Image 1: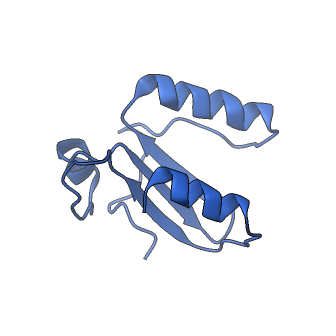
Image 2: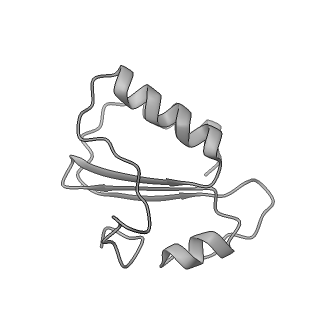
Image 3: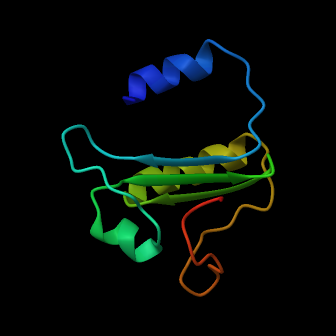
Length: 98
C-alpha cells in the first residue's frame, strides 16, 4: 500500500491497534522481508514501526532528520518514556512483533 492510501485509511477510520509490524519502502525499490536489524540496514526499507500490546512502540528510521522530527513530535504530544534505540540498549533480536 502506498503512503497516501495508508494515511487515508488511518484518517478515515477509528482503530484500536494492539499489534502492528509495519515496514516502509520507497516506491520502486525492492521490497523484501526484514527479520533483523542487519536486514534493515542492508535493505531499501526506510522505516520499521513495531507496536506491541497497544502501548510499546519501537521505530527504526534510517533518515536522521526524520528520526529527530519524530522524537520531537512525540515529546510535544506528551508521550513519556521516549528514548533512542542504540546498539547498547536494543534488546530486540528480531524486528517483528510476532
